[in-house]
Image 1 (cartoon, helix red, strand yellow):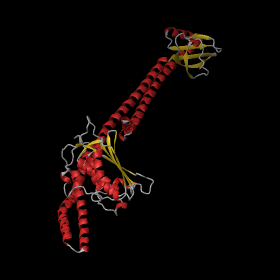
Image 2 (cartoon, one colour; image 1 turned 90 degrees about the vertical axis):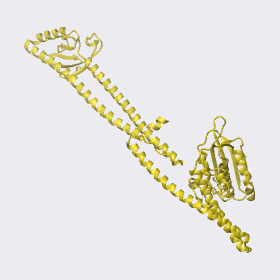
Image 3 (spheres, one colour; image 1 turned 45 degrees about the vertical axis):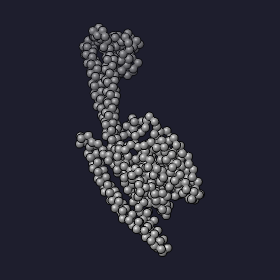
Image 4 (cartoon, helix red, strand yellow; image 1 turned 30 degrees about the vertical axis):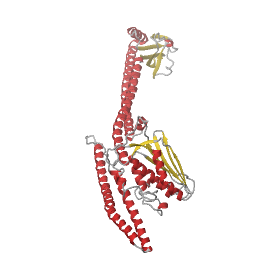
Length: 496
């Protein structure tokens, strides 16, 4: 699979294109060399045969037929290896001289060049060989064939062809290997950028793309991306600092205002004034809950220490949360079903996990109509511990599921209900601390109320191979003290 992905890279495809162009160039060059070399050797053979014919013609003109026969016999005698081929016959093909006994089948026309095979049918005693000759008529009705054994020439041509084929094969192999190595080197650099980008997208904004110090194109790209990330983080920290500062600075005067209103509520005798003061206290509580949630999320996302997680029975923890919310479900006549495996163990901060579980159960109860059904499950799946809350409520449209973990985001259906849109943001922050994955889906896709199924998958603790969770933000029982503790039923949670 890794090799297949390597072959799909644009770098390898570019190298493959270059290989095709380069191989085509090499092929054309070698073909031209072969054509020129083979043509030159063939021309030399033809010139040798032409020289033989010119000598025989001169002898024939000076000495006649007998002189021609004599010179042919002399040349045959001087050439025991039969490199030169001769055959002189009468008009009816009666052999007069030469080292061949019969005419080749290919010798059908006069004055032309022929290529034929020397074999026993021509009186050849050795293994079959290739030959090239020219035939013509001599005055007096005689027929003359003059040729050369070109078997060595053909062998040399085949040797050159073999060399060209091997050369092309080696060229293609080296080009392919070079393209693979080049694309592999480039892909490694790109993969480093991709891996770092994925970590940054998962929330690790402190990650930066490493450089090699070569100041090449990739280093320049990495430097530019790192500067861009630094600028983005700077702007985000500025916005976060402003929002956190506002939440922190306003919390104290709001608390004083709430206490004064509560004191006024106890001192006022007028029922209408008491009602107005009570509403003001409730609004102040809602504002304080929003600011507390913002500060909790800020601590979860930005502060960290090296404290170890503790082993927690996820089933028992969820059971405690369900016990807290059963009364709320009964008030709405809701069916509250629990299926909890107490043997499922995770490593985590119990307070944070309890708050995450409580927020999700609170959402399910709040957004499920009366006489609806809520199902809470805890079970193990391979090396994962799974906490699941499913309801028969208003649900979340598919188009809005990716956005529900954003701060203050609320689905249109839920805007008329109490809440501040921070509950799932807090759930997301706690899940990231515990390296958990959250999945949202419709519980009853075809129903009028599709409901929502929230599944949180956490790394499961098993004796002998416990996973150590990364550094945990400094949010524990201290941060959940008075003024920042979990707000039940509608205070700090929000289904989107």
